[in-house]
Length: 186
Image (cartoon, rainbow, N blue to C red; front, side):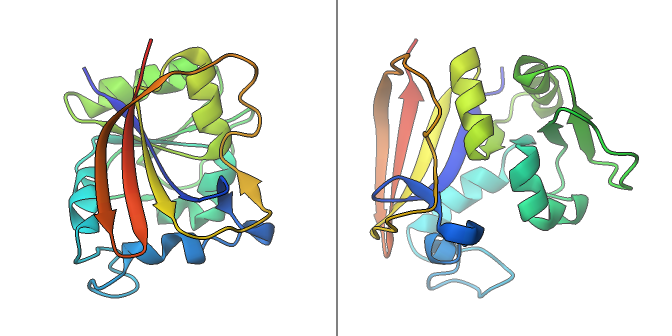
């Protein structure tokens, strides 16, 4: 069965975006020492993490994040994209994109079917929190960037009072980022 993995770059003080949704500083690791802007593949130890992310079989992304990312022009590394949303737009011309209006559990079930035995890449703060509350997120890959942003959008602002136990399964230290992988404990 497909494993769902949240992948988020985050500042040391817990922000995934600076004010006005600026993510430039947090995403520098994607091109550090690599093939340049536009290719988004680092050449340092971050390449292992990047390659894993690009080997996933489906993407689940929140509507806000999807829109802020320019909808990736309807293609996130050639796999189906599932967007939980309250209201699906009219046909947007993107055959790989499915808008799901009946909840995060249904969204994740569709992504699991599409991914087969590959992992599911999860993006977006609200989506991550919804997945954790519903018990459908298996792992977190936090790309911890050594900067204090002070304000912006936090990853876990509205998670609720329920404790979520995590088990650290991997640490990869790379220039400008430390990749921390956690398994969500049940």
